[in-house]
Length: 240
Image (tube, rainbow, N blue to C red; front, side, top):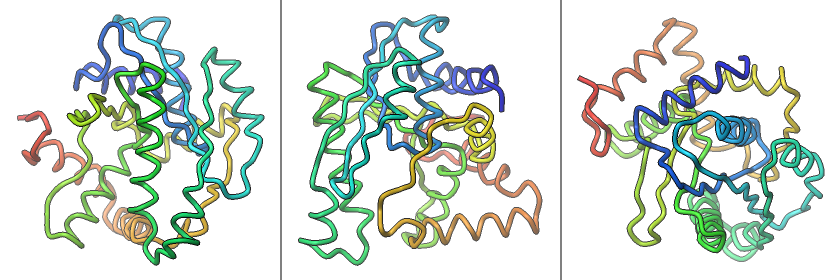
């Protein structure tokens, strides 16, 4: 995927769901993975031409286990003219050593979200951008169906009354394969996921299941995404 296509998809999502408004200060959660770095690239570049004027702050939540120096991400942020803030935590120790969680994802997510939101508010941000893409939204729908018995998934925009922050997902119209193509084409400095549970989760199981379904039934993931858009999920704008 070329840069202009990335801008086009991101702008389409921002326009369609009212993600970006004039004067916004957006915190971009950066994990070092392909998704968050692609999001950073998109929002940094769009500042120069998007009708609503906004600023961004990149934030890394360091989990506290074998912390890298983030030198390549620092270089990318300098290239993109984005301020980078690193928040050092002990989340890994809390989740795996103190709590000894067998299913660590939920607690880890809550702790990372809390740390990110706290830093965003400290920096004067009113919005937080997550790098969830089209496949993430479909996978979350499948997880909800299979394990909760509900037809539900991420919302394009979520307002958190408690903090006053608004969560946006500008990559929601972009597939994971397109993001992989973009990250390869532009040599993004991708870091290995430091989580010891990486690759051994229910989400990973559903991801592999969807790959198989899509191979056996070409286009099934796109039809699932269309079902989400037209499914009258609470909080989603009606597409019909």
